[in-house]
Length: 250
Ligand code: PEP
Image (cartoon, rainbow, N blue to C red):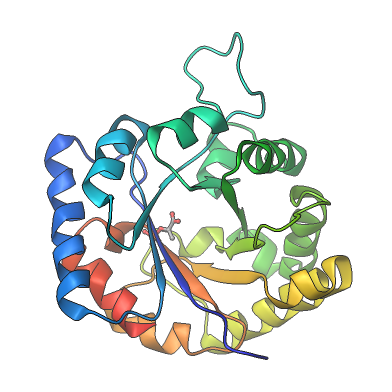
């Protein structure tokens, strides 16, 4: 497989007020000092910070993304945010189907697909999250669960947009536990085969991110694994220096 340009994406979740924008400024400085960086860099702050984060990142290699969007372009959905609103605030990407959304908000793969379609229609790149629970892994159904999530969460038509799927085992998120490198390699090979079967060449060039307790100390080994084309990083993306170490490891 040709080497795909990796994507290192940070998910701040529900963390950060205005003071956290210093981390964008710090990351920008670190990237500028480093010069040639071989990865795409994305930060997904909470929606309240999107616009200011995008202003702070302007003219730098840092892309800004949302953490979720509604499937409709507008309407009576109190508290929700549409894909075109994220775009307007300065986002280029949006995470959809994060396991916390699936669990806390009852999002099904069908919901996730509608959100990904809305993102594409608005001109955003969706990052579609999949991953099994610990019970599913112990029951030996991880491949089946992730396969079904891929089948039902991905829009049929990706057009010119790069397909990005993040494999995030639910039990590895925020726990400090990660699968073995062999298990990551196995699942990523499984996802690659499914995407190639569905999408042909677009499946070959899809970016498959790993997420779940990625940190500076394990990033290099994980990012060296076959079919791992980047990382989705939660906790370790909150501090620019940690996040930068992960970017450099790619
Ligand atoms: C995430 O929520 O996307 C994530 C990977 O979190 P953490 O890195 O904190 O496990």
